[in-house]
Amino acid sequence: MAQSIVAHEQGPIRPPNEANSLLLRLTRNCPWNRCLFCPVYKGEKFSRRSLEEIKNDIDNIDQAVKRLITISQENGMGGTVNRDLVAQVHARHPELLPVAYWQYHRGETVFLQDADSIQLPVEQLVEILELLKEKFPGIKRITTYARSRSLLRRSVEELTRLKEAGLSRVHVGLESGNDKVLDFMKKGVNGPQQVEAGTRVKEAGLTLSEYVILGLGGRSLWREHAVDTARVLNEINPDYIRVRTLAIHPASPLYEKLKQGEFTPLDDDGVIREESLFLEQLRGIESAFYSDHILNLLEEVNGRFPQDKGRMQAVINRYLSMPGHKRELFRLGRRTGYFRTLGDTNNPSLAEAVENIYQQLQDRGITVDQYLEDLMRRYI
Ligand code: SF4
Picture 1 (tube, rainbow, N blue to C red):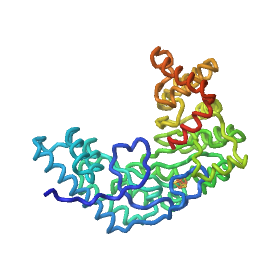
Picture 2 (picture 1 turned 90 degrees about the horizontal axis):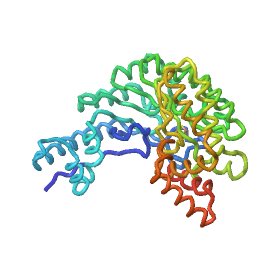
Picture 3 (picture 1 turned 45 degrees about the horizontal axis):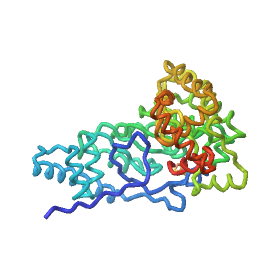
């Protein structure tokens, strides 16, 4: 009879680029949990998992890896975790699936969950990082989310200690650099504090990824949001800048503000104009810029500063100079998964498929905006 392995605990979210990473939960939920735009942990209480629980999970993962090797050998796959083995695990050993996916993707990256792992005492974090590296010597990158406020409670020396123990990268939800936007959205931090937190991470030699929410200033503060966010990032010069477009989930407090008329969101074209100003204001940095989120309209705005800035701006200008109906069709095609790039609008079969959806919406009396608003919420 197959040995049963207790699955390790995982939280609900991770950054888009950690899709192939092992998810190891150190804390549950978010210690702040007040950001208006964020529905993720609302109604859930923050807690730190005990060191014993976390070590137990690492042991379970280790056992799962060994069990996968045995199953692979027993099935003539030479101990490797390949596509066939993942399919077999899916059918017969679902408790091993997260570890099987991790091993299938080389088992080199780990993401520490949930929203703010840096809440754990430094000594505990060091012990966890060292244990991970000891049990899985193939690990090349360990990353975590951290709030700027929590980072400010850590000295550069403490962050350096985490780096030396194996932490590679910190993902920070900057969201905005404008104090009015940060205050309205109850982010619990201001622009100068974000600069200080980001600077400490970089001084410690950790890689820094900063997340920005396009559209977070709404109609009234979009210019300030674009200009001040760029200014803060120019001061930090993070390794990565990642953008995600605001979509207002009904479970987020911002939805109430929307209904009460206290927040008016930008439409897609407004967000792209804001992104244009934001890109234009990013100066003197050497960051990689990514739009790798399904909510972003222009996914192809990717590149490295300063050399790719002109090319990224050209993508935005190309979109904004398209005729109105073509922009509407692009938005529809992008959100329904037919188009990924502006060039896809010139593909006759893709364009025809999108035109068909457009006609069906017309026949049902639904506008593209109404349809996309509903669709976007499902992506949050
Ligand atoms: S700090 Fe992050 S996880 Fe917590 S409420 Fe704000 S956005 Fe959500």
